[in-house]
Structures are given as C-alpha cells and as structure tokens.
Image 1: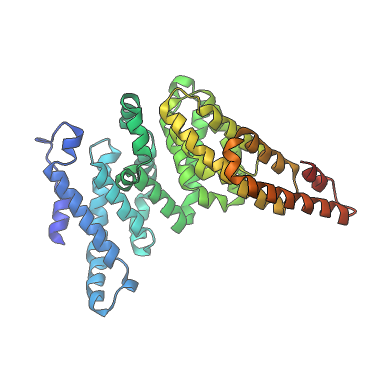
Image 2: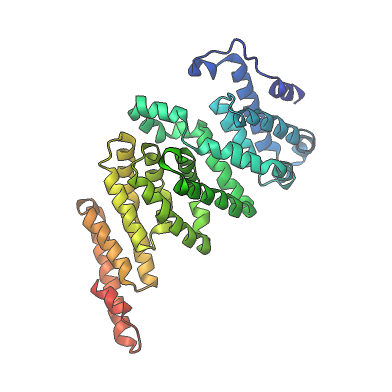
Length: 373
C-alpha cells in the first residue's frame, strides 16, 4: 500500500513527455499512474464497506479504511488539482479518480473528508469537465462523423471524464441531497449570465455544461414538483432562445438532452411544442452532429405518448389531447408502430370523458372538451 501511495504522490517529469496527445497518454509514467489508481479503486470497492466482508477479510478491511482510504483520497485530489489549473491529466486517470470520489460519497467517514473541499471539486473541477472544450471543437470542425461516433460510443463513455463527472454529480445529489439546491442555483446563475451577456461574450460552453448537468439530474428533478415548475420556466426562457441563435456547440448536447428531460416538460403544452419544433428544425441544421441528435431525439417525443395517456387518465384536459395531436401531425408515418395502441387508448379516453360528463351533472366542461379533442 505504501508503494502505491508513493507512486501516486511522485510528480511526473515534464521533460521527455511526448507532444502528441495519443502518445502522451500512453507514456510510461502516465500508464503507471493509471494502473495504480485502477488498483486502488478496486481495493476500495472490495474492502471499503465492512458490511460486505466475512471475518477473515474484516481485519484487512478495517485497516484499509482506517489507514489508507483517506490517504488515497488526498492523493487523488492532489492529481485533480492539476486539472483545476489547466494542467495535463490523462482522460482515463481523471475518469478513474472521479469513480473513486463517486464511490466514497455513501461512506459517511469518507464523505466528511471530502466535504470541506466539495465546492471546489464540484464547481471548479467536475463542472468544467462537463462543458464543451477545445478538443470537442477541434473534432467537430475536422471530423464531424467521428464526433458523432464518439458521442454515441458506449466504450468511449466508460473512459470519459465527462461521463464520470455526470455520474459524480448524480451520485452526490442522490446520496447527499442537501447539495442539490446549491448546485441548481449554480446552474441557474449560468443561465442568467448567458441571457444577460452580449453575444460576443456569452458563456456558450458553460451553458452547454449546465444543460448536460440538468440531463444528468432529470430523475431527481422530476421528483421535486417545485423544482420541476421552476425548471420548466427556465427551460423555456433559455433553451429555445439559444436554438434561435444557431450556435453549433450547443446543438448536440442540447438536443441530446431531450431524451432525458422530456418528462419534465411534457406536461406543459407550449414548452413541449417548442421543443418539438426545435428538434424538427434541427434536422435541417447545416451541422451534421445537430442533425443526427435531432433524429435520435424524435424517439423521445413518440415514446412520450405513454406519458400523455397516463396523464389523461388522471386529468381530463384538452391541452393534453392537442399536444398529442401535434406529435401525430408531425410524425405521421413514424407513428405507424404505435397506431393500434394509440387508437385503443384514445377510444378508452373518449368513453371515459363522455361517461364523466354524463354522470356528473355539476361537472365543468373540461371532460367534454377533452372528449371533443
């Protein structure tokens, strides 16, 4: 264990490092760092929780937790500090360190060690890793087909610092929910700065990361009704305005987010329609990644029909029917696989609305209007 810690703490020499990015990440010193971090992560996964061990392993697990788990954290944070100041750290090493941080969140003793530096980690290291960067821009410009491939490659996700950052934020909010309001406020401030800044100074890349962060937290946000409402307003005021500006760097992340956040906006007719129109417009965008993500986003709107019928069972509202009509109108042929279920559900909803209107003499006209729709 001492040897592993010594390897982590040893600085990597600047002299002799390859200039080429592909050669640099496979350079011997960085490979040693990578495998050391990998091994220590596996040790924590196996021995970091005393509840998972029998008597023969318990003594080692106790020693590992008491003596080394915290020291490993210190070494990892020291390496991440390089990222904070713009230094070089291979993507795979960054990914593995963030995996370690995600794993320790549920352990109170380890979380207590992390907490004093949590804001720096979250806002100055993790969030910037979620944003569109120079390497993304270069790949987008030089090889958009490769950009698209990497964006949907599961193997790339396994080694990506961006994916590990999203997992860290998601795990932090899920296990330590008290961090959610502060993080959401941070995201909202980015939206505000974007709206208030002149075009030449808008924080495009930060907003890109903010949209990605919302997508990572959509499951949590959906459970919070008050956040859901505020987020819908924020989404309407910032997301669609940004699409009107035709900013290429926001395209793939923003449109790809439709798949996760659709459930947050599906109950609001105006916002849902704007989202649908934006995705359809994106299919004619001159940038290939935007067109590809637009096509993939269509699936979310078609699958949203299930959510509509669930809501129609609970609320007899004509707006829900009109929104469903918009989807069918926009994607006529694409709706073919869903046609039978769609007709069955519409027929059932129609008779339910009619029965409600006939049996409840003092009922308002909402049920009848829904039936007409």
